[in-house]
Image 1: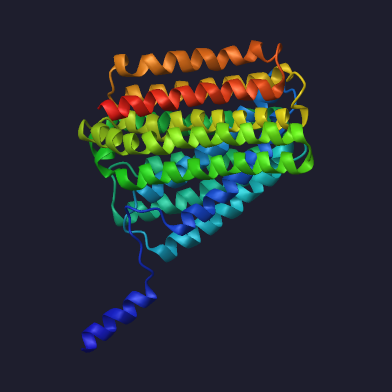
Image 2: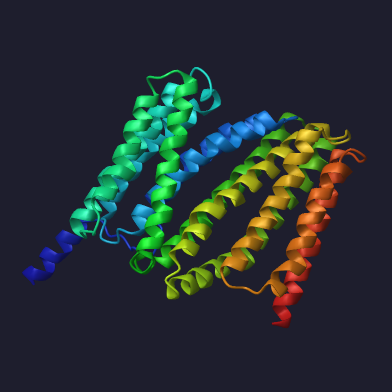
Amino acid sequence: MNDKHTGVQRLGREAAREPGRVHWMELFFDLVFVVFVGQLAHGIHGDPGWAQFGTFVLLFFPAWWAWANIVSVVNLMPGLSARALGVAMLAAMAAAGVMAAAAPGAFGDRAWAFSLGNAGMRVILLVLWLYKDRQQPGPTPWRIWIYNGGTAVLWLASSFLPLHFAVVLWALAIAVEVAMVTIGGRLWAGRAAADVNIEHASERLGLFVVIVLGEAVFTIVSEVSADWNAGAGIAGALGFLLVALLGWAFFQYGTGMVTAGLERLQSRSDFTGILQTTLFLPFLLVLGITSIAAGIATAIPEAYEHLPLGARTALGGGLALFYATNGLVTLRYGQPMRAVLPWALPAIAVSLLLIPLGAAVSAAALLAVAVALLVALTVHTEIAHRRR
């Protein structure tokens, strides 16, 4: 009886965590990154040029890479308690919050704060990886010090340098991390692939996409609220349908494919494939969704006007990127080309045709064409699934 009572007390002191499921604190942490995405997305509203698109991508990747690193270390630490995870997530939220607040001026007077936020994130990752190595010693502990310790020093040093020197250190830090992950995945592919928790990885990615799509819906609602008229209502409704159909495609067909595809890659010890489909290609997917939301946001107040070239590029290019990424992921998971190309190539082609078409039709009409494209693809996918 005493043993049972002691066990209950111990359970109360140690918050339970199920390694295969995403913890609430991880979702809480994701909210800061969605704020970061929202901050950067404002830069591609309206009529962005190549400089604005380039700035968006260049600032978004360091944030995405930091998120991917946090996700990876938690995935590989099944013994991490819920309490320790919560402390790590709160600390990471603080660092990510600094990055998000500095993002609008990261290539200006807030570059030092953006650097400090990234340095803080690497210190947190360093502590987590060292903790993991203490619990499960690896063959090359020096990699941890270079991967997070060395890059933390680079980010910290960049906070004291002029912008043109700081950017060089930013690029060097990211290049070191990407190169070490890629090379390490090739050298120790079997062990690395076996350690990945597939259930956690697939659920983590799906829930993050939920939040990004939610940010797109929030943007649409905000724009309709700010421009309260019939045209804004029509464009907002079409924009909502567009985002809803993207969500339908991803969650009805994509999430199940993610789990099965990752399991297939893991069975082949294809750690490179796991990295590509959980870290690199999802970056392009989120980039596409954010660009689509920016194009919709520009269309709502100008429903009866022609969209400017930058907004048309964000909308059509974002859709093309969304479908191209899904096609690449599907192929990487082992699906044959004859099953992927019949839907991927037409979807990408029609998406890109929206860019010149927008010069001839109104913003609302362009959104209607985009919705028609997604409806056609959804019907095609539904029929294919029913036949199988």
